[in-house]
Image 1 (spheres, helix red, strand yellow):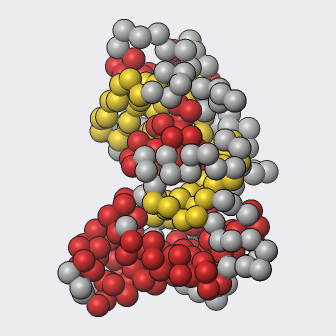
Image 2 (cartoon, one colour):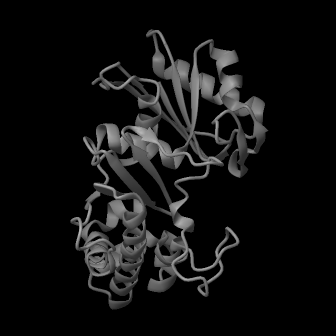
Length: 291
């Protein structure tokens, strides 16, 4: 089972060992605090499992986790702080539970089942309200020394740039998030900006162009450090914008990419798993890869 637990929604999938999806369940929720969240996850798993035996659960959470993935350090929208959530769900369901950050789980979902399938090292950048991401190497998440690897939206492009909510300045998220696109386009939200751009609105087109260039610059930096073979662009904003965002990203990568005399630029693809990426990735984490 794979569960993608956000602040207001929970998406659960049941998959077979070969990755075939047998059942999908989606619901909204208002769970807050450890007791309510554990109740919610257990109910979601049992509902989606129906009469099938549950052997393991991958749980993707919109949260910061410890490096060993044992503890939710903080999940503001779920009211969790220093909670050993995997152990709590295991105690309730009696099956192993693997915990992961939702952005990393989505990156795994794309690497196992989506746009980065077959890649050796893939990066996913998720463009939504903010900018999230994840790095997957040979099917495994790069967690980092403190468990925070993959916070790609907080890579600084300009240390004299605008202040970011993380405390830094000039972070990628300041230039390429859905909020940044809407602000630049003068629209209520990024979806309206995309709709306006498709009608030829100059401000909206410029906002998406600027966001794409910022993403491309970030990818160029990541390419020099990590040498990905595939970079996946996901999230709700990217899904709606499509080539309006991909084209400036690809141009920027070609223009500023390091190591251009050594290797070709990474393939840059639109995500394929849609909103199920996190749940699929969570499920994949408890299904051994076949050689």
